[in-house]
Image (tube, rainbow, N blue to C red; front, side, top):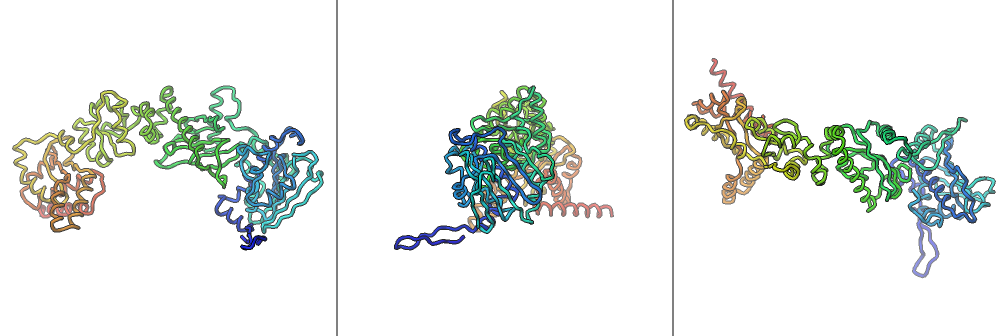
Length: 618
């Protein structure tokens, strides 16, 4: 960017910015536009806006717009040309809008005061052509007056341009033709097949006819031969539904589980949401295909729907949404926020309709997308009331719905983690307890809301006391006989803050149950570290507090033959080793991550038991 002095007062000279066009084009290519291919979108946008402006011309003093106004594309490998029958430019327009960077013909032109009628801005959009060409040639004739002359503008990538007026015969009809001579390094974006593909990509839903000619002598082919499927007439609702589904499959490459028609007249939005037929990984969001006034804006517009709606992909065309400067995403404003909420309401209504009238569709939908529905139900009372009884959960009765589970369990217990559920599931089931795995996202919150939708249901958190209260105690004689072994076991496991008890429970094949919550382990670890760091008097105080922290509990099963043998061991070292081995096995069965000390204990106890067995055999 250079500066130019202009005369001023005694304080000095005023200076005006002079744009380095090459630097500006480099800025556009690396920071504003995602790819050089946008040059064709910008040319199409300018042509569409010119046609829109011509249709708005007042009839007096202007050339009446004939029927069949449209856009013609031409690419033969040597040039790329875009011609429209739009409003055209006068010589003053050319000087004002093509030679002044950043000014828009739609911003100042009295013909186009209604900004919402236009897609882009002519001046800055034309600059994108320098991404693929070193020279741009514009030939235009204004439609404002019947006898307007033609005007030619030639711009070069180094910032030079020329303007000259030509006879009206140089362009018999009003409109504008933009011709590019591509650079060699831009061949991948300007060869005929690519230009045609880009035109289809960006302009398939444009409301003005667009045709493409590859210079081979064959007839020009339509780029947008049909309007959007939601804008067409269909003989029956079923035919309409099939047409929308076929369009969704063509655009996204999958057969939708169902299609949801979207229509928001307030912002001129129409389109469809295609329900994905398979489960989407949690947290993964798909981009949506957004057109503005028929022109493709983005294929990755995540912001059009709320985060929980990751079970659909949308293709929409809107009138009132505002593009960002690059016209490749949407500007976050109140209009977009209102559109997002309105579309979310359409999705809620579809779920409600499926729940009320199509249980087969609802079942297939929930099988694939129950996580998305759970995330919605947490915050949406209406969806909660409708669908909570139908949602699947992991329980001690297997994967089932809460409605079915609550029929067989008066009190529904819920764990706080997956790890806790895995620790207790088999034993709780054998004890007749109904436990739901609350460790997955949303599940614990939703289970606690079951009483809101099912009268008489009771929900409580599962804690160690609840579980151990349902385990049968052993008789006094058996407990006294095992007292010495239990004392040695408690001493061996004191390093893990673990108590040891003897009970009877099913299944008898389970020798031991380790009852320990993640929160209790964290509290013990925190207290231990604090004690080690403080030392002295404070360490003694913290040590006393640490003793009050919840302890783990290893519950030995008297029904298990191995345990009945272990509690009779008299040899102190062997008793200690067997207790460590039982603890290690119970810790592994809990499926929680093992601490280094626990891994070491498992290895040591195994080797000690092996050594004892070998000594005995010898």
